[in-house]
Length: 186
Image (tube, rainbow, N blue to C red; front, side):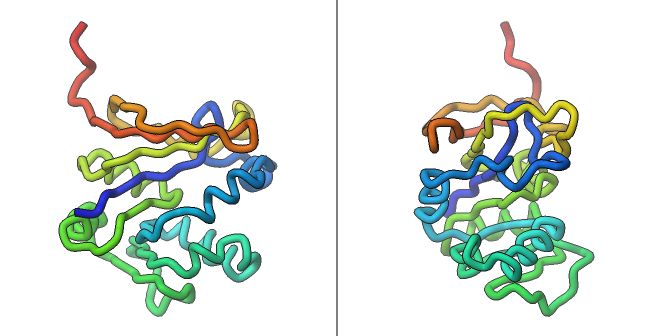
């Protein structure tokens, strides 16, 4: 059965982006970019907003996301229409939780979200997420931050299974998540 990994980048205070800051908070470096190029083959899952952003990057900066352009991608959206412009991309208008449940049973490749905060949250709540990976950027976006990653999440216990530092500043934290019905008893 293929694993599902939620894969997110965040500021230290849990924002996925910030107004006025460049992509990756201007802190992407050679170690991190090399790591991105080493990713195992997988099917990338995303929502319409992330699709629009990433497919636009594919047109404007094709070398930056060349590996992603070649991978199998699934976009969950009720607003987008086929045909989609980005190669190797399928549109699924059905319930993402049920579609991903089916992919986990029958899919040939591991699954990984890309951005898509609402999608990631709904898959975690449904108990479908096997790994929860964050790359934490050493910035606090108290004044300019947006897209707060963990708003609306249930309580989740995380078991650390891997950690790594990129370029002396970025922290990868890879966890196995357990969604909790209530806080643990004392």
